Image (cartoon, rainbow, N blue to C red; front, side, top):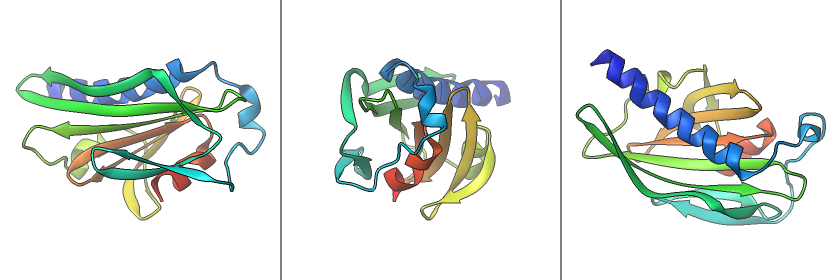
Length: 159
């Protein structure tokens, strides 16, 4: 059962990274410049959870999850998510995973990896995974994963 749980958490992280990775080719300039936005924003709602995306980021219609149901062992979950990119090639993705009839636990989020951190009032786990920064946390009993090519984008997205 423990092995299935690790596989299950790993699949969630992989889907989030794949969504961001397919959003655009990574622009290394985002590592050295500030690609976060203090300008206009767009409100995005996924599974009843609100997110704030900088207006210069547009949805990538080729990279989204819409009620993708997966089963690992006896655990079934449904993922919904969207990725966004700007003209510079910076990318971000938001994935909300709903586990059929089960609320996600802090232990399950911990298994996504990273360092325990609080961002915008949400306790979760933060890590750098390849060229992307990933923050996973619980909201409304669901696992929320926000990935971005610029670390500075994560906080305003979930604020």
